[in-house]
Amino acid sequence: MDYNEMKSKLEEYNQMQILKAYDRADEKTKKELECQIERIDFKQVADLFETTKNEINFNNDVIESIAYVDKEKLNEEDYKKYLEIGEKAIKDGKYSVVTMAGGQGTRLGHSGPKGTFDIGLDSHKSIFEILIDTLKENNEKYGVIIPWYVMTGKENHEDTVKFFEDNNYFGYDKNSIKFFQQGKLPMCDESGKILINEQGVIKEAADGHGGIFQSMKKNGITEDMEKRGVEWAFVGPVDNVLVKMVDPILLGIMIDKKVLAGGKSTVKANPSEKVGVFCRRNGKPGVVEYTEITQEMAERVDENGELVFGESHINCNMFNVKVIEEVANKNLPYHIAHKKASFIDENGNLVVPEKPNAYKFESFIFDAFDMLDDMAILRVKREEEFAPVKNAAGTDSPETAKKLYLDYYNNLKK
Ligand code: UTP
Image 1 (cartoon, protein in one colour):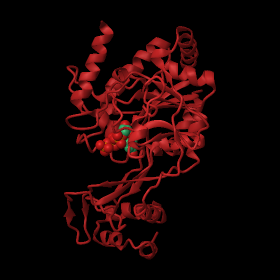
Image 2: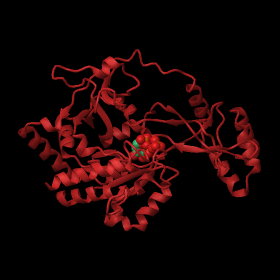
Image 3: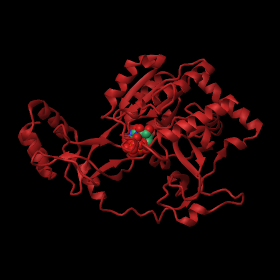
Image 4: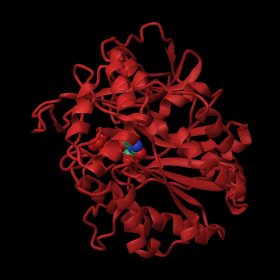
């Protein structure tokens, strides 16, 4: 793309601040900007910016509860049946794990990838090592090596790969771990102008965990799974130190009921807890955000006194590989996050805002659920499977996660 082509493209989309940044840049930065200007879909960014002006209206959606299975309440016969089916698939090498580690971890404020964070255990193990420990345990139990796919983002890809290399993959089979990068989208200011970052190039941010389906396909991950004979993938977050990545019961239920997708829930701590919950939206599986339901709905209980909308989505889902490929062929909607983002202004000066000044566009994994015919939901115990690391201090912090982790393992020993 030559200078004039770039200029007319940027003029068309009213993004001339990018050309000013180009004019100021050194040769290396110019090259990077050229690649970005060629690659970025400016029409898409303009359209996304337009959506920041719309009010989202869910009023017409019909939101109902969704059936779930409570793991604790399964009778012995069903438990045994699902366990056998699930374990067989794992032993046959049909199971894999995908970890979403492409987030920015802004709330935690750790400078490296979230998975490299030390939550303060005596062993000083990083979150990645904690996760790898559970995979190793399962490998031993089932006599397999479960392929592990780690999704990174533009900002943390190199650091993540280097961390594994420096630590010799924590003794895991190197060929069974694959890293792949998720997509990214430019950030823009409140007037729709795309921001320039501290390096003098276009500021891009991860496009949300919903980007996982397309990035898995684009980066040959689903192809790799098929080559290995893998049919199922658990897709979970990096930031839950009790994440149970290998769950033969959920897998067994899905295979038995011929459902190609599943999700784990924990029961809402209280009706006003700020979490998304599984639901049926217009008849399809979905997640309803706490901002979308009325207090009456949040507090509604069934004949057993259980919350009708009480199954929190903890971002632990399972998919058949075919489903991942199918969803990858479609586009998920983007949500808008209003964020604080430093940038270089038109005069070349660094601006560090004190309040949100920019829009980031993200898709969410659960927006894919309404493309599915059905989903198996398994309610699991919060204290056994949910110890999130989100904030630097207070709730869902390294301190609370460490306590939950230690309590869980101490209880197991009893
Ligand atoms: P969150 O959205 O809760 O957190 O991601 P975050 O991005 O890590 O941190 P904040 O919001 O900036 O503080 C939940 C999970 O989804 C992954 C995260 O790595 C985490 O495991 N994720 C999130 C991605 O892989 N990519 C994304 O674009 C966003």
